[in-house]
Image (cartoon, rainbow over all chains, first blue to last red; front, side, top):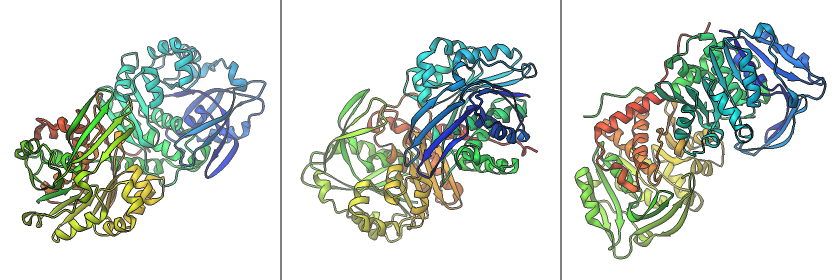
Length: 306
Length: 306
């Protein structure tokens, strides 16, 4: 199945206890596509300013990323500057400059409009709805959001939820959206408001899938070295959606597998700065890590105790 | 295998957003044994003051708990008073009165000294060592500890670690003990200092087992109603050790299963105040929940992607 993502194409400047980067490739659509393309080709819709290092993006194209939906606008590219705490558990946004992203009105190239699987990255829910209207034949639609939109564009967001199959958010977003601090009640609340499934990402602890017949949990991969959590959630989404697009099936069994491939991509994302963790990652490495993930939780119980 | 626990037998006064209890049965040995006894008989060593409601303890004996190692001392029983935040994520100790626990010198009844499986609950590591000396034939020894001992009795604690098979701690304790905030490095540090296995409890997120050939993770059970987290870690230990004592085998496979039964008991513990969550819980219910736990993480991957 063809897979399309719409989201930010940004330049990230990140400070961690282990070093820093300046104006590195980032943004939700970039992390999503770099992770996802290892499994399945990805089409990207976004916007960059005249200062964006397009040659760096183009170097990634042979991995299976179609950047032809990235609009070039006059002005500055979206920039985010953030600093992580010593234990990477919290981060502070030092600066956000929306630049050309502020006036972004996604227009899909004609050859993208028949995309079958669609991921609406974290942008204004009104724009997410606008994208959805341009892909009338989409078979599976997932979306992300953030507290900013939950607070400021709640009506549009709720309208969007009624039209998507999957909401992927982190735990604080799920809590804020539902008004319930219990993550399982929050998930159930979301399932009553449109999506058939919800994925709640819990950072270093893992991710939860609710919906269908089951609740499924996959822990984060046990990593002794974590360098940069930026983009882990988007990489998760990329692995998740690309696995499904490749499989073409959307059964409960396949969603469980998609959670594992999402987690695999999240684990590569945090292992280096920015998108560097995906440099040279092969499908074979992905498969080996997917099997290590399964082994991390696999248990066969004995016959019931008498 | 016979199973012995040494730990506190206390009276807890707990305030949560959902209600409060005063002078309720509590303490690590009580939670451990009430949870464990559902699977396998438990022998308890501890101390209570003259004010302890022994008839309430004795009512629990038919469940398979042998209280004959609980010493009766003149004075007040150990009391703990605590208050949880609205989301149960943090708690404040309002009062700790050690009472007779301050001068506790565990002496095991003769018929307890041949116990095969031993759990040293969170008491002074010098006392834990003293108990260990009284059970020379113990085949599997696990211990708990806390930040207070890590800071104040580090040498004794390190000596204890060289003599136990399993350390069971929560994540903040593992971090403090190892001096490393990365939980997987912290676990590896612990494994280099004596125990063959370490269980790191992560509260509402689950628990991690490191050692043997594998790292294994079990999430916490998805509960929409959590009333009182008090004792969940001790109940986990009780389920874990009682499963192993019942099985008698200590292979990697059995340790994984023990993690599931520990998690099952943790989930019953938090579902009501104090030990009430275990009221009427049958082995059949335990088995059903163990299978629900397995289903929560179970995934079979497809053939590797080509």
